[in-house]
Amino acid sequence: MNILLNVIMKLVMSNFHSLGDLTPEEFVLKAIERLRTPPYKGIHTVWSGFNEAFREYFPLLDPVEFTNQLAKEGKIVIRPAKKGVLIYKAGEAPSITLGKDALKKIIED
Image (cartoon, rainbow, N blue to C red):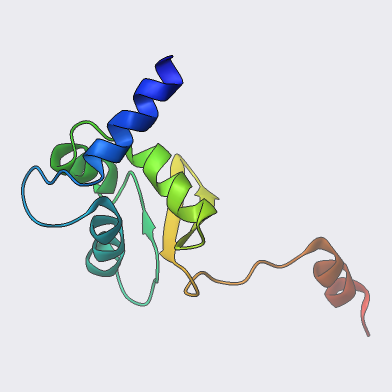
């Protein structure tokens, strides 16, 4: 029952705008653009103030759950970071070096 209530609340809140006209998705994408510090393409959700701002703008939504959902949909990329995560717009995240690639670089002459 609690899960159903949570889903219904999210559906209702996805159309709710407490301080303006941005949807939660628009808010996240705009935050990434405006809070990042060049040359970096992403933002730290805690240190940038994103989580706090999201909670203020959408008081009934959880920024962690919402950004995780956007990542599942392929709209943003989430990378673990010290004391939080970094979020990037899809296609802007730096590539990840895989263990095989790292090993190849190490042992290659």
